Image 1 (spheres, protein in one colour):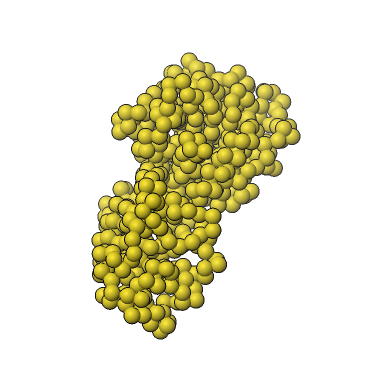
Image 2: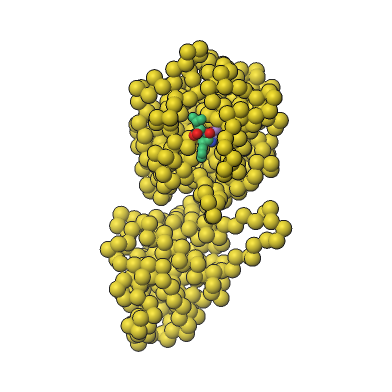
Length: 497
Ligand code: BES
Ligand code: MN
Ligand code: ZN
């Protein structure tokens, strides 16, 4: 879909569809009042008769409104002015996308960007509009023989900005919104693909493809034999029970000066998590195809960064493997030695994410990182602790954690911090090795991060547990593409603090 910004009065716009906000009770927005005046009170009449009272989510199409150059006027209910906030604005955008699907128009001009939302500027409203429209158009039917009906709706959306001085800002917001949306779509596609298609080899191929699309990204794939040479005993122990070869994918995006330390993103890429010998119960086990959403977020973020040609260096590392229970599989009680030299007693083969991440985190040292952020669908305990709205963040450097939280708030892809305290390390003690890979039921999301903290002492590090945010369960099952918006926003904020 095409997006554009313009600045001007609504009655002067020659368009197939003018989009005007109405708030409760029966209150026209500034643009609405102008149209009302030009049409001798036509909009007020509609409102007075009760056909549109401004309730959140309500929409009405009016044809041939006198005094305008528009074929139609679409009224969109915004709810009570005092209740307008980020969440209700997103709901307004959802009802707008719905309404536009059922309209004959090919393009539209929106004045919903004029709506006032406390603490949010025009940049925010435009980027959210772009992302929301793209989100609502997303469709995953590549594996159906009968494709979903082609989404009807507009091809082009023009958004109004308050003055000509805002045009540049608006265009930048569009560009960012488009780049982030295509990163989100890539991440969603990878998440939604089943484990028999999206294997570690498939993820490696996607990385290579990204490198071909963007010459600014160079890609190296390490094979099982390379992992052996690097003594990644922990990562290899997870791959041992699978017939699909594991891959360690590394991607370097060069946009900044050669001597600038990179931001390193490490994404969990378990393309199917059966639990291994500590096998999971059968209910909803299909959802464990999403256990590579951390990896997908790394690929999506790199794609967004490269599309915007951002002047910064970013590295993406993806340990990719299946977690399956065949004859060679790791057994509970097995002890392995990680690349760092720490030995690990594997008390539960279903706590495999930390086992592949710890070696990838040690490998990350090689890039002399400025900061390292790992992203993983790591624990069910995270969902119990926080639900499905924020991702969890824990880290060893509070400015990094706070920056991430700030970027998440900015782009509406939020984080909540959990404590990464020394005290919890007790739970990871092993009778036979340096570390156990599980810490019991209490504080499971925290002890998982504590496990990783043993491998990240040499740099500033934050861990994002996205188990509750990377996909939606139930009837509308599907991948969300989170936290591509957050990670991209963090990188943008590092360039322009
Ligand atoms: N991939 C899962 C975490 C997960 C579970 C994400 C459910 C989303 C929904 C991870 O590998 C796992 O199995 N974790 C175990 C850890 C436990 C054995 C300490 C868990 O959370 O149950
Ligand atoms: Mn598991
Ligand atoms: Zn897992």
